[in-house]
Length: 364
Image (cartoon, rainbow, N blue to C red; front, top):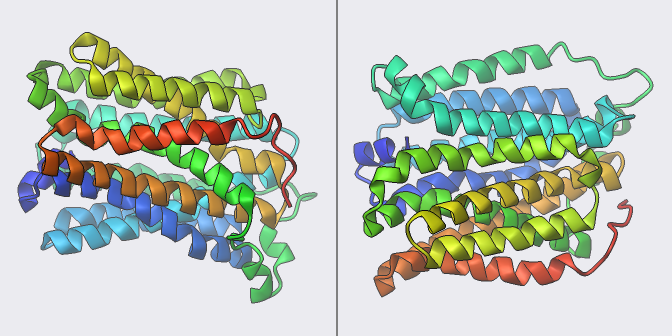
């Protein structure tokens, strides 16, 4: 889909990569207003509003009159994602208080199903349904998002649990949901999150151009489908073992495996590199799921939103910069695989952050 959009607006490889990663940085910086909205207006408003904003912006991307407007609308779409994604960890604790780990695994499984569906079903099913018009394809994908928002309106949290908004009588309470930038936990967990996010997205951003350079385009469609199915497989793995959530060892193991996989995809070719890419997608997705669900396990109340927002800003902000830096270096040095090296280097550094503590302490 990114290739179709790039051809329409005359974007080069770097522009397509930036378009792919732009919603990521929008998610990063969108968590600040998201945290305030959650504390001020409550979880349901944040989730429904975020879903509707994402649906409208996603559809509007198909009718942007220029690439500049396209990038701007993509940012707005990312803000919508940030709004409901920041609310979901707190919603897990409030709406499923006696099954936090399982609730986290279930909603993250749903997110991965959506990720896999969008990436895997667009070209073979939705695009032909839209008459091979990518603009209509975006419009069709917005329909289920609106339906989900409608269903969420009727969700009723348990009466014995309070929504964070009930504890927020004023703007002061909203401010307490903002990240603390001198908080080492925000930076530690954010760095770990960046490693998992960049591991997955850097391959998605450059796999097409790298396989074309290697003369392996015959496998591209199948590899993309399989690669974007790995988050779904990872979510089922976590769903089957919710005890992993909140534990250090599964996060460390998945981080190490994603490093090995990305290194294999970078320096190998042929089927070994394809297998390495799938290993990266699976391991990075497990790490991402475990990290995103961590705040609901170790924090309570507005602290869940505060930690989740801080992690997201740090993690997605770093994850946006690294692939772009790699793309700039690859073009300058005329070595395409160099686009992956900054991300791989950062992931190796992040591994040392993983082993700092055996257990994740309670956060308040």
